[in-house]
Length: 188
Image 1 (cartoon, rainbow, N blue to C red):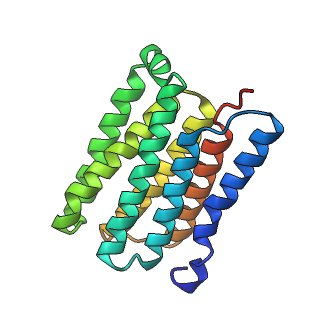
Image 2 (image 1 turned 90 degrees about the vertical axis):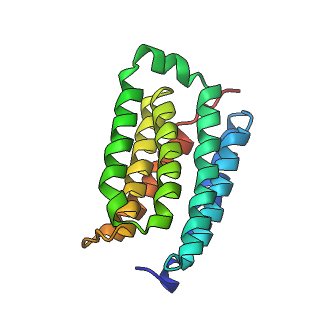
């Protein structure tokens, strides 16, 4: 539920970052800065969205999560995502088509001031998901779960609310972030 019961949400990504650091220390592997930067931005976004009934908080949270998407995308590009996408160009085409369809469905219900920021953020989110799919199934599945979670938030912002939506949003977000972080290659 919304409100005080969500106060622990900003602690989730730092806990996941601690897990990643411990896992990489055990494997004697470097910690990718793009992954940690993405988790730090997600923590900032989670914190901003605690006051999500206010438009400035929503925009601030979206801006912080934009940092997450850019960080993850940069990391996936360093992992060779473009090579994987060259072998399967349909992934990028499907991502762009999905982005256009989702924005066409959500935009009419959004406040006009939110349409451009939501379209821009969702394009970055789609790029992250597409590049994740170019690196591997685990990270790609996580990115798709993250994308699905944010699509549910977009639908909610556009006035499309249904029972269990909050649970689905959090489940997709947490599952997605877990798969993204544990799907990041660990190389000594």
